Structure formats: structure tokens, C-alpha cells
Amino acid sequence: MTLYAAIDVGSNSLRSLVLQSTPPHMVYRCSSVDITRITEGLREGKGILGEEGIRRSCTSLVQIGKTLQDLGVPRGNRVFFATESLRSALNAEEVIQRLEKAGDIPLRILSGEEEARYTSFGAALAFPDADAVFDLGGGSLELSHRSERISLPLGAVRMHNLFGSRFEELREYLGKYLHEHLKPFPRKVRGLIGVGGTSSTLAMMCKGIDVARYGPEKVHGFSLSRDMVQVFIERLAPLSPQERATTPGLPAKRGDIIVAGLVVIDELLKVLGISSYIHSECDLLWGVLREALCVRGIPAERASFS
Image 1 (cartoon, rainbow, N blue to C red):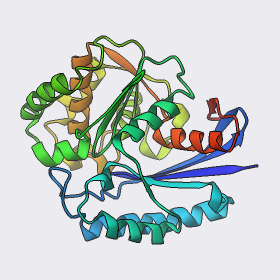
Image 2 (image 1 turned 90 degrees about the horizontal axis):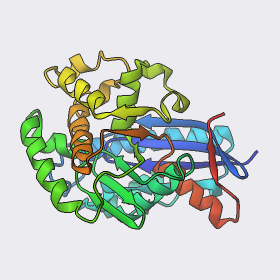
Image 3 (image 1 turned 90 degrees about the vertical axis):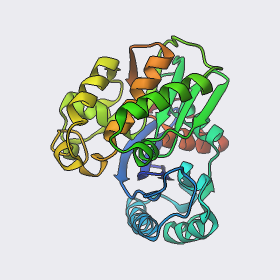
């Protein structure tokens, strides 16, 4: 049994994924999500990453390393990367050194274009005929459509830091920004796929699945409509983060940013002129590992959760 692992240092969370290669399938084995909020406090995305967020991330990386060792994932089969969290940090060089020491493997910084491409490559394992894919993370929003790929600074954490609970201002800002920057993309795309923590949480909330009972197969492929998005915006917006956290499917640490993330998805669907999308658990991490296998000449054409 040959195992491969990917570790992603995101703006909001530090994630890991372990897959088994059973050509041509990539079989899910386990994953983890730790909300470390390494960009906590940054408003425009640029600035000095704070000590607490760095320390939380390093602690999480040490634990992931122990887990991967216990599972028997060879060090050469591990891929370690960061996205928006470190693309614009002013102290990125120092932080990279500390993260590499904690993770005990080299760290690669993905560009926005690479992030969008890998996300599309991962989603295609489950939805090869999808017209477009979006990935809403903590720091950025990636959108892929055929040969067009774009990364926009509209992540859930960033929007929360900028607008707080001023959701109407956020809507106005997003409407103008998306209309301006999505001009290369066709309206009314067919077969939109969505990935990322906000999308996964929305699917969990819609299905009433408790966080402790999460499993990718429970939400993968679930259809989410604009009506569903708007229902939870209206339900959660008036509540405090602590009150929101009582909602089944919503992690407590995501309570402060969830509404901002949902508003981003709602405005994206509005601008694209579509009423629903399909949530995929095959995402950026799957795409990065898929490429790692392809480089080694190992067929990786389909995802499996069993």
C-alpha cells in the first residue's frame, strides 16, 4: 500500500490529506483541518504575520508530521505548500523557515494561477466535464474556466477583516469588484463546481451533519442553490459568532467568518448568472497530489472515497 500526503498552509486553516494510490484511482484515507488563522489581523492581506498565528501553525505541523509517520507515509511522498497566506506576507522568508522546520520538509509557495490550476485539476478527478470551478479560501477566491484562471483577493477571512458585520457594504464592494475582474469569464456557465471551507461548511449545515461526524463522502457531490446560501446568510447574520456556532455543521472557529464567505459565494453566483453549483471535496490538495503521481508516471484519473 503506497500512501501520499499533502499539507496546505492556508490563510484560515492548515489542512492535510492522505491518499492511497491504486492506479488509476486515488483513494481517500484520511484528512485533517486545523483552523490556525495564520493571517489573523491582516486587513489588506499585506503585512507582518503575527506570532500567535505562526506558533499555532507550527504546532499543528508537528502533530501532522507525527500522524503521517504513524501512518507510514514516506517522507518523499509528502507535498508541503502554502497559498495566499504567504504570497504577500512581508515576513514570508522568516515564516517559511519556521514552517519548514516544524514540517521537516521543504515548503513551496503556489502562485494564484497555480492554485486555480491545481484546484481545477483536483476537481476534475470527480467532475471531468465541469465547465468551471471556484475555490473560496480564507485569503483568496480562485476561479477556473477552460483556459482562463484567475485569483482574486476575496477570501472569507480577508472580507471579514475588511467589513466585519457590514454585509451590505460587502455586497456592494463584491458586486463591483467581480463585475470588473470576471470580464474574461462567460456568464451563465454550465456545471459550476465549488470547493473550499465555506462551501463544505454550507453543505454540512444544509444536511444538518454535526462537525464531529464529518466525512467527505457525506457532502461530496451535493447540489447547493443560491436559495440555500441566502437562507443561511439571513439566519446567521444577526447572530454573534458564539451563537452561530450552535448551528449543526458549523465549526466554532469558523463562526466569525462564515457569513462573509457565504456572501462571497452568493455574489459570485449572481455575477455568473447561475442559481446553483455542485460541492466537491476533490480540491487543491487532490490536484497537487495528482500532479505528484503523474510526474512519477503513475496513472491518477479518478477519485474514490471507499
